[in-house]
Image 1 (cartoon, rainbow, N blue to C red):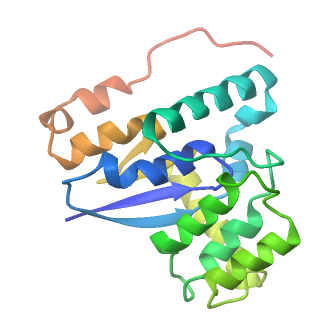
Image 2 (image 1 turned 90 degrees about the vertical axis):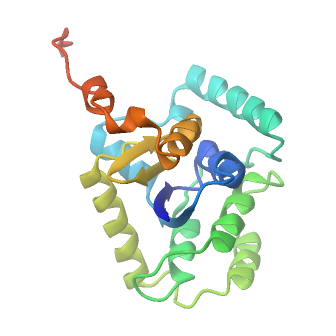
Length: 214
C-alpha cells in the first residue's frame, strides 16, 4: 500500500476540489493519505509569485474554471464572502486537532475545506470559527506557539521539496501539482510503465531559453 502526501491550504479552491474528488479519482487503488497543511502564501513568497486571485483577469478565469470543474464533478461549492482570505486559523486548527507532531485526519480536513467552500460565508467570522473549533475539538491550542511553529516547519519542508502550489500530492519522491494531476497519480499508483522509464526526468530537463531582463 502506497502513502500519498496531500499538501493543502484551504485558501485554494483547487485544493478543495481535489480533496473532495480524491476518493473517486483513485477508486480501486491501494493507498493511505497524509494530509499536510502548508501556507500557500509562504510558497508564493519564496518563489516570488503572486496568487491567481491577485491578478484580476486570472482571478476571473480561475473562478470560472473552478465553477466548471465543480459542475463537472458534481461537487458543491460556494465562493467565500471574502477571497483571498487569511487561512492561518484553519491551518492551525487542523494541526491542533492532532497531538504534537501529528497530522489532521480526513474528517478534520473535510471540516476545514467545507467551512471555507460551502455556504459562501466569511471564513474568519468569529462565531463561525468558534463553531468550527467546537466540532473539531482540537487536542491543543490552535493559537499556541507550538502549533504555529509546526505550520512554519511544514511550509519550510514543502519549499525544500520544491512545492510551489497547492494542492500537491507526493508519491514515491515525485510531486504532482493540481486537480488535473489526479489522473497522473492514479496512473502511478497503478504502475503505469511510463513512470519506470526515462520520460519523467527527460521531460523536466531544462533547455536553453531567453532570459528576461529587469
